[in-house]
Figure: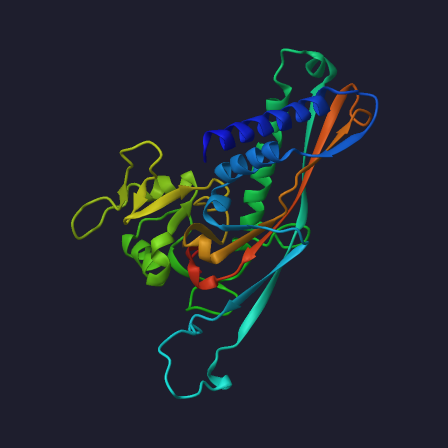
Length: 321
């Protein structure tokens, strides 16, 4: 980008920010709705992605429609090879299927006092920006794991877990022990080995801090070394068996309260989970329904679903019968 282009971009960002501030601090005696300026909306989207562990790993596609159709095929349906003189029979081409990912409306509300909006030195735009970001990130991330697909995305852990081999529309898992503990290093290795080699280059371990505290102390029984490798540089994640660990506190804890739980995933979510959203974030200023405060009501449309079950593997803890 040359100097002139950088200046144009800086000027546009400044204009967008000024427009946003004028909207926030403008007349407080009537409803008003705007689409957030692109620079503000893009900043919110970037920060949400940084705050949402699942979104930071998954594939994100922007659309102007209310749904995205994703064409999927089976593990053995790769259609590439060397061209020969023989004709390809239609029956030899693997059947494909289509997943429709519908977008749902997510909202975040932030209330501020009149005095804050009237204070010319207060940075109210950052306050509201951060409120919208943290609220939306929390609800998105939880839905990407546990959403039922009704008025929200379909979550990874809402699907059944198969512990006796891969099954259609189920996530393959490995029973690593009883509820309340993770202590079998061979089972951790087994979870890793379940993932096909073609997905390993983008694979990560996904777990809560609670699960991480159990796994950190496990050693390889053949050489006495810890399976967990602590990071030695800022911004570089810890590793487990050579693959990065992503801490996601929405993941289930290692608990004794349930008959079974899935505290750890090993997955290539870029291949396995598809997020779809509209690029526009809308915000309504409401001075009436939360008096004496001004309410800002931000909305966006977003959806998500598993598109490749082979790219996601699970560790399962199950109560002994």
